[in-house]
Amino acid sequence: MIFPFSIKYSARLSNNFSIGRNKEALEFIEAFITKKTGVDIVIENDKLTFKSKFFKWGRLNTNILVPIEKGVFNIVDKGEKTILTYEFYMYHLFIAVTIMSVFMATVSQEVWFGIFCFLWSGGMSWLIAIIRHKMMLNEIANKIDNLVNNLK
Image (cartoon, rainbow, N blue to C red; front, top):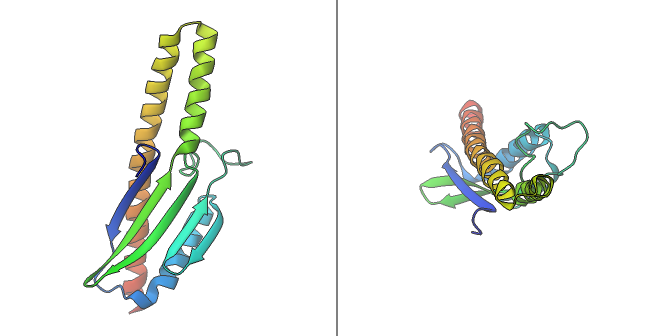
């Protein structure tokens, strides 16, 4: 894992989840990510990958996928339990904050101000992004559990 550009989380799915339902779960995740403006979604075996466009018309900065470049969901069967893993890459955030910080340092003619902007804006945006993506994974896992329990 390349810190802080790649973050990986996991969530345990309910005991009722059978490995035969991976396709249904990944299709649910696909629909969820599509609503969040994810693009280039590919499902292969037990893995779903998607990308996020940095500049996409009609998408606000509050969209959860803005600071990330791509994400990968995996469903891993570990015998008695099934784990949903989610890894996302935050290069977009780093690039945007670096450009903004260089601009601020140039305008103010103070290097320390550029460094402060990078640490404050980048650090807070990074912290908010990792919290929001962990919450998104938990929301997806809970909805998959509800989907599985309703199909019984």
